[in-house]
Image (cartoon, rainbow, N blue to C red; front, side):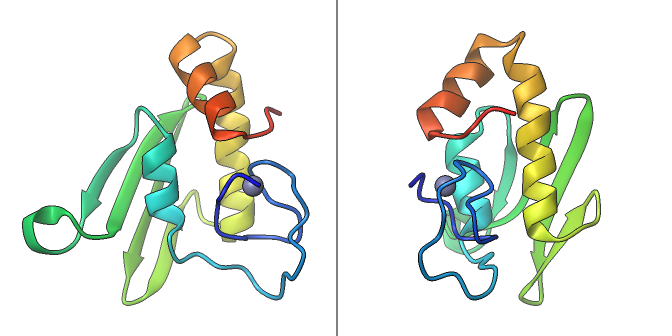
Length: 115
Ligand SMILES: [Zn+2]
């Protein structure tokens, strides 16, 4: 288990099956990603900007990934379901990991399954 919120029946990041999966959970997803992605730019909510991550942006595998919470909804670019978006992000990071040791370390330290 990598600690990511469950987005699908099988974890998008580490491929561990979620024992009691009912529906995708996106709460905490951006905080989780911010803690594991060395190149992510984040904006946080709250006093002194130390609250939950509201917006996250990362360039990976030649693509730009954006995510932000707006009125409780997670808006993603490229557009898609959270599981598909995260899967695409990990695939992009896997491409970067081949050439960038920092990304490779971050991905393996996170316990994510490279594509
Ligand atoms: Zn996982």
